[in-house]
Picture 1 (cartoon, rainbow, N blue to C red):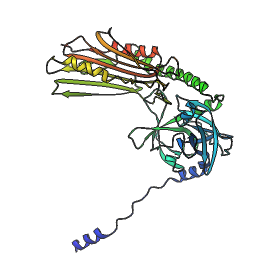
Picture 2: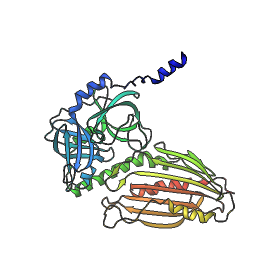
Picture 3: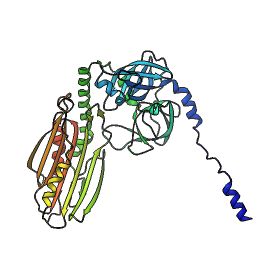
Picture 4: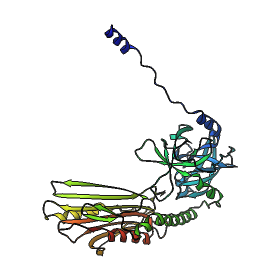
Length: 426
């Protein structure tokens, strides 16, 4: 009897899995706000050939739409070549960029033909752990709503980012983040690489000043000048949050094998590890830090970005060949690349090697610099440095900074070299 019962159960179809349905509140929000959430497209010539696609939402009448800067940055780089269009349902409207914010990755569009009602803004953010929803047009497939949780703000980074437990997808950039009453609390902006449920938003508090700003001049030279002005503001924020605290007096150090170094402030994401290369007779300890959530601008890439790497090498198999290995190690960490002279974005890198005394050590250094051609006074920098004071142990420092001015690079690298020292050299 038992065997017969097991056979019957094995042949019986499995009960259908329960499919989670959106909450009643989400369904009501979707129905109420769907007409005010739009698709933003950047075209070059043929309307069907989109060079960029994102989302947006109506924030003010008549037809004032908020989206992300990175959705329309190709238009802002070449306004004579591209056009911006906003699609609401089956209707498509020409749009004009009124203002943009590089640091907070926001842009405001004017869409004269759009008559959708503006969404209301929440008077304050909900407490961390609160349910939220986000809307947008993922991959251009149609308006979608995603439920999630608001977790407050990310503890890392030089700009403010809302920390969201929700799987945003490509094409949802610029869509609204709403509380349970359907009020705006933020704007979709990005996701964590290789994560399926960690996303980020820009708080709604960043929007009003941008909406009230005077319209930009949609001419290439004027837009480049505005980006340069915003780079200066971004760098000032980066210096305040990241560079100045790092350069300030303090004894917050990190141990890196047989070396120690100044630990960057909490806005950096840091990690460490140790590698043992038995065949080469080498032990390497590593300590690396990156500044999170740095914005990007068209063609140039990330700006206001900083990465720091400190390593300690110990020869465990004798001194022969130790420094010949380090000679090839340093250049491998230089990130500068040869530039197309016709490109006009970055100048060809110029590199200088030297020996300098910093802190307790003597360093062999190579520093490279490329200028942001269209943004005078801003540069991409690389520095690699290796101590040359001991025959079987060495410290190595690499600094990479993009879209910064010379003073910021000098302040950061002087602190990096001056605070790194060998603590158990033979």
